[in-house]
Image (cartoon, rainbow, N blue to C red; front, side):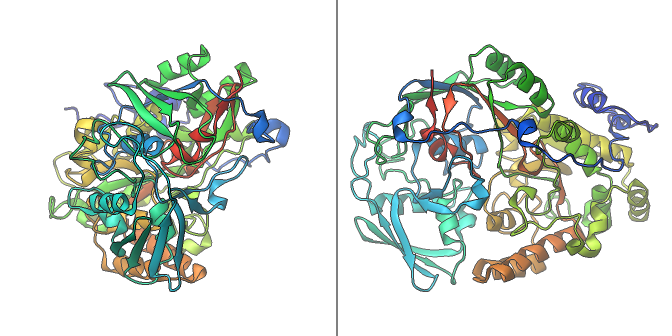
Length: 583
């Protein structure tokens, strides 16, 4: 393989559209020259005006205005499996949220930022504790599972919750370490459970609301039916028609415990892998929703003036990871200077521009985010996220700066191997993500690294091997929706998906402290210290991806009403059951 795949010997200024064209090249890769010239001093940010923004949610004033029925058509990826306790894929968990209830869920409301809202009961009626360590969770009585064999619409009981908890925490679960702070669960009676945490916990409600974790399945799952083939839950939609790689159809649960919801009769999730095809079907009126590429936002807004827009609140943390010490004990990235150099090779201004078209959108008055990720996502805000460009970052802020000269000096001091270094990213996620994978490789090559670039298939290899740390070399990837504590556990704890198999005693100590710190300001400082420690060592190099600062844009057809946002994978319950069609 040509090890000059991403090399360039010249530096020129180039327009962003030329950069996008370069990033989209296949075979020849992305020339380093196409990356240069976008990292100059950032332009002043226009202040968005209400007239310029035109990113508005259409909402209803009263229940009587809702038009019930109809089928909403969206595009969706094919999940690698359907059982959320057997796969860490975002596609699996997103699909699960339509079908399964959780004890709690993330609160949503029209015209509200979900990060300003707390959790609220879902299947649970209440969760109470007198000491923050011993919790009594009471279930809503009379909630029924879907009327599908062999469960046949029977009532949900505490035994089903305990069964689901045991599935979440058994050895084959990819997310068992995310709930390690919960040390015990017992059934008190049919509608009551007792949870015990290892210490007074500020995160218990967050954990049982997290759409990564405790989906409630009937205890017949795995014996009476296979949840990998037929999901059965008590959520707002039934999984009724699954044509692999073609479509999923979810029909409204007629026995859903929230009376009157969902408003829709059905949601058809079409499997359309290519963004160009998704866009074409939205433009033709065949899709009601499009996750718009940032460079298409202004054009689509101009051509479809009645379309509705939401800037996402989705989480996301992009990183460059390095294979673990157990796999590559003598690798050059064992030296922190190498990892620091990698970080300083990356022009985060340009990467945000490539991912988010931020300059053009801001010039049009849109509130395009340009936050930089740290070891927590920039979408979180200052309660958990330390701004790498702020004075509070301290001395380690210099490692976030684009400084290829200093990066080269560090590489010269470390010394580089003669063989090319493996560099991997997946063909999954989105077209923008793949361009970002190429762009990061371009920066590393332009910074002096000889790379052996590889793309891995998302379903067959990346999510089952690479994502779990089974790779050699350098990896560009993203972490999707987790809680603040969950990001620390995933990247630095005993989580099976600790990609770089990083176990730093300083971060471990800080992680344990934040898990039991009940004072909000003190807990924030623990999160800040974790991010400073990672920045000093660059165990993971925080960087940008296709959703900069949580700022992705979704376009909805003019007939969709009741729009709202959520902050995790739970949109199937938290958002979709509230939507309705004005035909």
